[in-house]
Every structure is written in C-alpha cells, then in structure tokens.
Length: 226
Figure 1: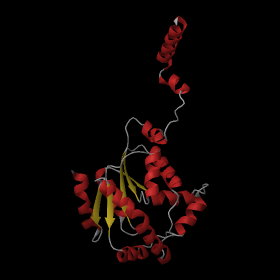
Figure 2: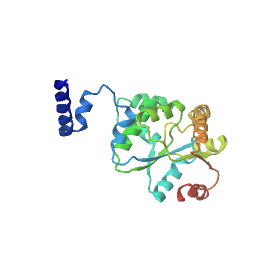
Figure 3: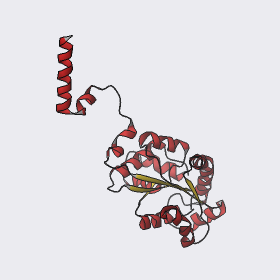
Figure 4: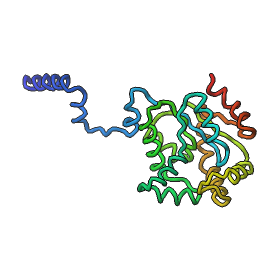
C-alpha cells in the first residue's frame, strides 16, 4: 500500500511540473477534429453562413455586409477556384466537378474552409455559398464544429437567377446555360434540406433577392444592426 501511495505522490509532482501535457501523453482518447486547430484560438471565431442559388447575388451582398459590419468574407466558390489555379492535388478534380455543375466533396470543401479560417487573423466570418448539402453541414460540424450565429438565405425565382448568371460575364467556367441548369437542379435537391434544417433551429433569415443592390441590402441591415 505504501509503495502505491508513493507512486501516486510522484505522479502528482510530475503533473504539477509538466502540466496537463503529461496526462495527454498517456491518454488513449483521440482528439476530436473540432477540438483542434480553429478552436485552439484564445477566442472562438464568429461564423455566419450565406446561402442562395446561382446568380442570386450572394457575393455582392456579402461584400457590402462585410464592409459595413466588419466581417471577413470567405467565398467557398472562390476557395475552390483558387485551388484549381494553385495546381494542387485537388485542382483537376475540383475543375471537373465544377464544370459539370456538381458539388465538390465535403471533405475537400471543409478542409479548404478550415484552412482559410485558421490562417486568417480575423475572428468574424461571412461564409458565402456554404453549406450546400446536408453532407457539407455534417462534415463542417464534425471538423470545425462552430455553430453559425446567422444563416442568410437570398431567395429569388429560377428565371431571374438564370438571367443573372448568363449576363454577369465574369469568365467563370460554370457560367453557361447547361451548367447553370444543372446547378439549379442541384441547389433545389441538395441545398433546400439545409435551409429547412436551419429554419427549424431558428437561425435562418430569408431575404427577398429581387430588386436593386441597395434595396436588397436594406432588407439585410436589420439582421446585423440589432
């Protein structure tokens, strides 16, 4: 019994001397992804999601929201296109997927988003175009794990979205009629369940995206001005 008591005292002394790292070294518990990286910051970032179909004007409104209320705007579409330009291991796969109007795998998308948040000095983010599927949402919760404060949903009819995409002339590989039709189908099939999920949680704000840029922004203001 005495030798066990002595061993216990030694362990306590080592614990004091070396802190919790001693216990971590002997722990068999695997650190959950959402507890690493981003959540190791002194302050957990504030994250807001922005959803809407192709051509609905998410990017334009996100730029204005970010400038007015001090958010950092992260466009998932831009992150994916930047990855294509970087000739990374994912580049060709992302290009092929986007060109077909399909959704890039959740693992790749969330990894790029996590990296963008981790490497930024900001702590308030507006994430544009995410999560696009329930699979995206689940992967985000498992890997990043920060509950969004607000989920904006910019809504307008398909005819208007199609017209905007085909006339915006941004030189994007997915700005053509066939790809846009496919993107609209994908949006309806995969993103609407995400919208329902955040509606049930009381986090979703639906914004009428018909009108001028200023008119639409005035509908957004009350959400962030309170």
